[in-house]
Amino acid sequence: MTRVPSKYLLGESLARVREVLMREWDPIGVQDIPEAADEYDGYVGRVHVMLMSEQASAETIAAYLFDIATNHMGLSNSVRLAELSDHAASTLVAIRPELEIH
Image (cartoon, rainbow, N blue to C red; front, top):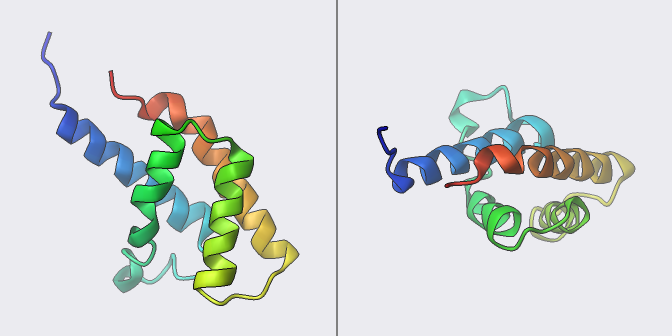
């Protein structure tokens, strides 16, 4: 059996988190702009740690994403933003088993 280096698996795991943030969260609406593919990269690492190392709940991750959007990006507190944060966090928690590195 061939072992895949954990560094590769970590990279794949981070890429999946990045994809979810861009596709499911995307609070500023840039997912269709190729030049903005790295827009949320500053949050990928922290979300990954919350998800994998801390085993954070969807509620905790959603609160973090909502805080980033409102307090760091300066977006208005809205139901839509809360829904985006909740949906992205739920998706992340749902794929957590797929991201676990053995």
